[in-house]
Amino acid sequence: MQILVDGDACPIKELIVDLAVKYSCEVIIISSIAHWSNRLNNKLVKEVTVDSDPEAVDMKIVNLASSGDLVITQDYGLAALLLEQEIKVLSPRGKVFTRQNIDYLLAKRHQASKLRRSGRKTKGPSEYSKKDQRRFKTAFIKLVNS
Image (cartoon, rainbow, N blue to C red; front, side, top):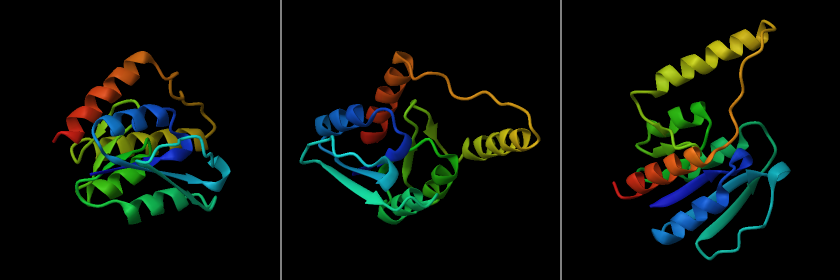
């Protein structure tokens, strides 16, 4: 199993690498050139850099991921594409994306987008917490072992 990470907005890359090492999984972190960094020095980690086009990271992940892999992303649209390929998808906050919840999440995102376009303000994500980290670890371990 490969662990692919949408690296542009992922606040827990180091945690993902630590967990992947523990479970002997290869990690591929995909980031746009605008978010490039070479901080993770581990033989199980491969860093892939793509153009800064808006969907370049997503398309690279779609092309690299295979059935049974695990992708870490907070992008609902990307999650929907991956679920169709039998790929496990997890958010950095520990939300497991499934065929049962993805339509609701996409509709919620669409509604929030419509509100913003009409000039209304929507609430952004809360600060990443220890509870989010615990939820992520629990879900990660469950998905890696399934």
